[in-house]
Amino acid sequence: MWEKGPLIYLLRELGLKKEDLFVKNTRKYIFKGKDIEVQNLEEFISLLSKMFPAEKKNISAFFREAKEAYVECYKDTTYGTPLPAELIVKVLGDRKLLYYPKEHPHFYDWMNKTYKEKLDEYFKDENLKALLCALLGYLGTEPEKTLASSALTACVSYYLYGGYFPKGGAQRFADSLKCFIENHNGKVMVRHKVDRILVESGEVKGVKVGEKILKAPIIVANANAKTTFLELVGEKQLG
Image (cartoon, rainbow, N blue to C red; front, side, top):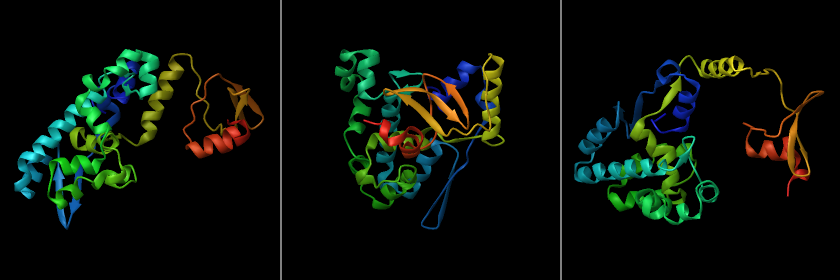
């Protein structure tokens, strides 16, 4: 939900306001029986500095670099979403990829190290490093097996900018999207469970919903990859 993120881009395009639809989460961590409750990054840095005084300078330096790397990650984005290497070439050209390390020095460093290596680079205190791994549950991997760039975007970003939750639950946000689509002559079909994604000669042609065939050249599936490809598309349709 930060100013250059994809959801902010979407809300801006739709003329919707963040404060009407989302509320910032409170932040609380329980570490070795101690409650750590903070409102923002500055409070988090201050509290960590008191808990680990020997690491005070390193804590500030770590988050300063993390913030620079995060900004660089979103430097060349399409619709607020960072592009992988192959799409940087396709959208922005070969030269952009060639100059990527020079133009994104901090994020490029995070791309080429594990999260453990990045933590070891700054800190000696194992308890501090363990605390800064608390949110790796979002990724489900150990710090030595997690790319620092993945930890940055999925976990460290919560320390930097906080997390948000839809006001009144996700339904209110969904209803806002539905209203926008219908106001622009679109149609939202609820209670239409897709049974099959129809594919011909390697190209999507639509979906099958019960006895209905809904034709479309693009399908966005929010099911997991296994369900999407093996059940809805079908393994026989895959290369």
